[in-house]
Structures are given as C-alpha cells and as structure tokens.
Amino acid sequence: MIACASTDKLSLRVSVTDRCQLRCLYCMPEEGVEPCAHSDILRYEEIERLVAFLKGHFNLTKVRITGGDPLVRANIETLVSMLSRMQIPDLALTTNAQVLESRAERLKEAGLHRVNISLDSLHSDTFHRLTRGGELQRTIDGIRAAVRHGLTPVKLNMVVMRGVNDSEVKSMLAFALSEGCELRFLELMPAGMDRHEFDRHYVSCTEICSALSPEFTIRPHAPRPGSTSRLHDAESPSHGRGRFGVITPTSHPFCSDCRRLRLTSDGYLVGCLARQKRVQVRPLLAEDAVGREEALALAVQEAMGHKREDHVFEAPASMARIGG
Ligand code: SAM
Ligand code: SF4
Image 1 (cartoon, rainbow, N blue to C red):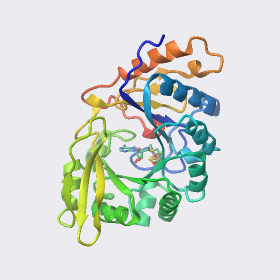
Image 2 (image 1 turned 120 degrees about the horizontal axis):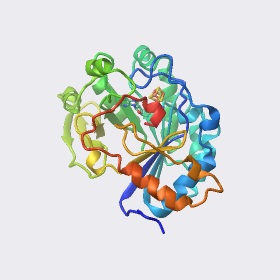
Image 3 (image 1 turned 60 degrees about the vertical axis):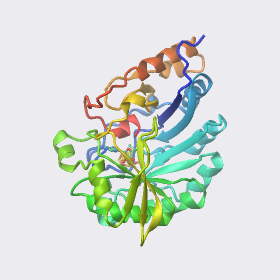
Image 4 (image 1 turned 120 degrees about the vertical axis):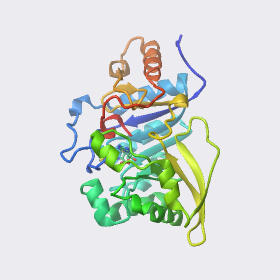
C-alpha cells in the first residue's frame, strides 16, 4: 500500500546529463562544473521506472527532460519514446538548441510534444559571450525547425541580465511574436554564480515589464495556481499581438503552491531548488529493487517536504547540475 499518493498535479524535471557544450554566464563557471562519472548517470530504464511509478501513484501530468543539455546525451530520442508510451499529458524538453535543427524531426517522431529553448540575445557577439561559445544562428535554426516540425508551443527562455542583454527585451519580444513562439523572461536566480555577480546583474519582473512600454501595451493575466510563469498579453502596432510570461523565482517566489520535483542525472530527487537537500533514489530504480514502491513513495514525500516558503538560496549550485 502506497503511503502518500496525492491527487494534486505533479510535474517532474528529469536531468539526463550534467554535461553541456556551452558555459552560460549565469549557469556555470568558464571551466565548467566537474562532471559526474558516466557510471553515476542514470540509465534510461531507471528514469523510466521512476516516471512509471509517479504516473501510477501520483497525478503526474508533466515531464520535462533537461540537463545540462539533453541533446548532448546519446540517443535521447530513445528516452523520449519510452516516456511517450506512458502517455504523459505534457512531455517537453529544454535545450539550448545548438544541435536541434537536425534532431527536431526525430524528436517529434519519438513522441515529444514541445520544446523550451534558451535564447538570451539576438546579437551574435553578445550571444557568443553570454553562452561562452554558442552560435546564435544555430539556435535560431533550431527554433525554426522546432516550429516547422510541430514541437509547439515553442517557448523561448531569456534570462535577463543588467548590462548584458537587458537592452534587448523589446527586440526579443518582437522576435518571439514574429516566429510564433511564446517568450518567457526569466529573472536571474543566485545559482551558479557568486552573490556579487547576482546583485550586479539581477533585473526584476517589474523592470522587465516597464522596459517593454511604450512600444508594447501589456496586460497581466490573473495568476494561475501552481504556475511559475506570470502571463501577460502584449500588443504593438508594429509587432502585432501575443502573450509572454515572466518567471519570477526571485521577486515573487512561487514556493507555496509548487508541485515540481526534480530528478538529478545521478539519481537524486530534489524538491526545492533553493535548498541543498536531496533524496537518493537510484538504488530503488534497479530492476530487482525490493519494496520499490513503498520506498519511492516515502522518498517523494520527503523531497516534497523540503520545499520552503522564503526561497532563500542556501548555497549556489549550478542549474546544470540540478536540471533547470
Ligand atoms: N541547457 C538547456 C538550456 O539551457 O535550455 C537546459 C538546461 S538549463 C540549466 C535550463 C534553464 O535554466 C535555462 O533556461 C537557463 O536559462 C536556466 N538557468 C540556468 N541558470 C540560471 C540562473 N542562474 N538564473 C535563471 N535561470 C537560469
Ligand atoms: Fe548549458 Fe543550459 Fe547551463 Fe547554458 S543554461 S550552460 S546551455 S545547461
């Protein structure tokens, strides 16, 4: 008998690798983060067992595959098709899209519903500097391939950083509207960087929205329970109309109704990004694990109990490690 099944919707982010071909300023240091040994990385069958358990005993409505960059892991399409067979209502993947152009069709065929793509600048030199090596055109080609192959709605994530890309919020919204994508501005989080860097570059949701006017008229939607994104309608005589979101982990933490759980690439459940606590589940995902269901139920309950109200980060850890 499972101890703690809940009818509340649950969303799972699965980090399939801590490796990435980029080194974004806000995510990791120039030298990268020390990678986990290959033998410590969960196999697809282990991930499948956890997802099947959550689907069977919790109201799992959303799975997002992330990393590091999930497209650097070999045969990610195999995991997508394994999860797709479980009929998760919302099966998504987050990527920097550097290699998405040639993969979008196969990902769609494997059963992926949609993608979130990081795009922080429309100037190739800023993009290259911010990502420490990324090529803007590759990401744009990836975005267009995702739209073409129906990995929609394509959501574009822009982490807004003062003095780096904050002058681009209007042009980014215009670009997203013209490409038929939904833009989400992300407030910077104090993860993966020191406090001084965070204070220097942080831009609040209020500032982001003010920077859009007068070119855009914007109207906020009513807040949606459990959603990380504050949606707004936007309209402009030259760019048309559409909507965008602002993710506000720093100015308006959404901890109180957070139903997100993360699985790290080395097999730990993380209930709260702001805390260092994690619960090891890898031994429970082995094919012959005894008492898997009861032990996993307790592990999920423990990880969900780690959520905190104030969202004060205990220690900066790279999002690439935890799975952003
Ligand atoms: N590599 C993929 C990508 O960049 O889209 C997926 C992993 S990345 C860690 C997931 C998301 O975390 C990205 O949208 C990235 O912008 C965001 N992220 C990473 N560090 C962040 C920080 N310090 N503040 C806000 N967002 C951050
Ligand atoms: Fe890589 Fe994504 Fe982190 Fe950038 S944000 S370094 S693309 S994992």
